[in-house]
Amino acid sequence: MNFLLRSMMTGLLLVSSSAMAIGTTIISTSPVPLDMTGKSVASVKWGSYLVNGIANCGSCHSTVVYKTGTDPFKGQPVEINTATYLSGGKKYANNTITSANLTPDATGKPAGLTFDQFRNVMRKGTDPEDATKLIQVHPWPIYKNMTNADLKAIYEYLRAIPSLEMPVL
Ligand code: HEC
Image 1 (spheres, protein in one colour):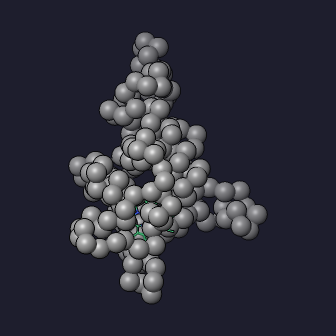
Image 2 (cartoon, rainbow, N blue to C red):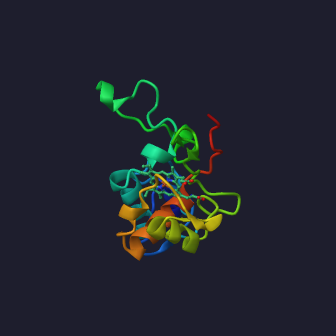
């Protein structure tokens, strides 16, 4: 077996940061393995850092954030619950609002949205199903200050995470 093949099988990434990658890989800031097919490593890495290190999307878009017995607020070592990671389903405003499933749909689009729709959600709070409505709770008035490159990176990261069904609470 040649070196390249062996490295790919062990999940090592040999491509330069600007190149498109293939296969599954692990990025230290992401709790889930990533499908890198056709994605920029640099963009996905930055997106992971924003989603997992700064923007805290999981606090609202994951129903059970930590695995049982790994609650950092009880002094336990933290481990993110990958079973509900970013798959939405959290209820707000007396159960009238549900956080969206951000994982890729069957066509690979995060939350089923094109990048333009996603950018409008993040910048203007536009409801993708009804442009006359503003989505609630989701902090778009804050996220609107992110750059296009940031939003693109988040979108690319969300394209790379495993697809999950939204839990029904
Ligand atoms: C404070 C809680 C909260 C945080 C933090 C949050 N969201 Fe949301 N988000 C929501 C809720 C609730 C909805 C559903 C709003 C509605 O239906 O009115 C939503 C909706 C969305 C939608 C719209 C999906 C659709 O199809 O309608 C997208 C996309 C989205 N969020 C992405 C993100 C990303 C990416 C992050 C992190 C950068 C994030 N959200 C952080 C609560 C949050």
